[in-house]
Length: 260
Image 1 (tube, rainbow, N blue to C red):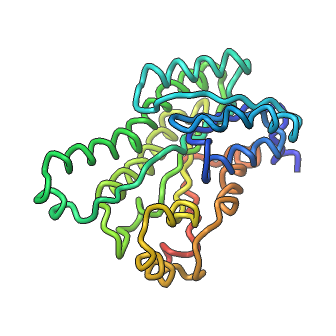
Image 2 (cartoon, rainbow, N blue to C red):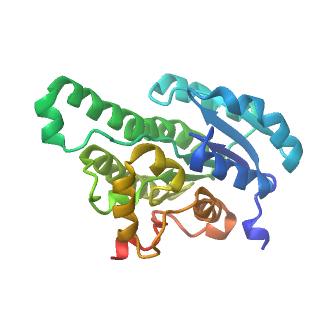
Image 3 (cartoon, rainbow, N blue to C red):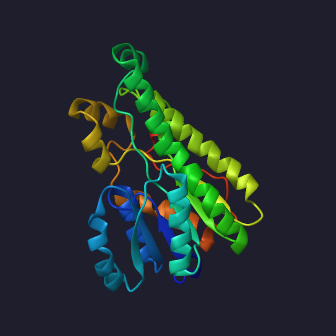
């Protein structure tokens, strides 16, 4: 069981101010890791880190960063390395969804807005992970070890129905292949894996109309949406020494959706 322990490790988690990112960060703290929690527009986590540090007996710090700014991402990662002395684990979790419906309908209504929304999805969901990977990769190479886990989506494996979201599906498919590609490039010094997941209750309720939610749940073999905490185990495994021979893999946590 020592292989699963996070004691002495430093975990850095983007998108950690709420939802699944928050639960991932808490999971690492519970397992004994010191944790750097990233946020952008939700500073509430700044008020929590002291209490979380005391509760779990680890060091927890919050870092504000706009992930679409490559220079700020590099600065934040360097600051975390300076504050903690190293970074063992990087969880690239932050992302946004496409809620604009069919591409052609959106483009016909407002082509410029459609273009802007597409670029925003690519910038937040894909380019941000590129910026994180570029910076953390240098640290992992210098250290000679490290684990990068990228939050993808089952939408990178299948095209969702009934909601239509070509930009989001495309972005998440890109992340899965980015993970595989980096796993090959970094095989000599670090591991890279992805966790595609089904949308959780927390996120879906904010982004999808109730009628779509009911339809979607009929498509999940387990008949329900995930709870954020149900996703955490995949990240803990992939970041742990128990996964020392696991790289370039893609652990789908989706209630069986992609099997149907």
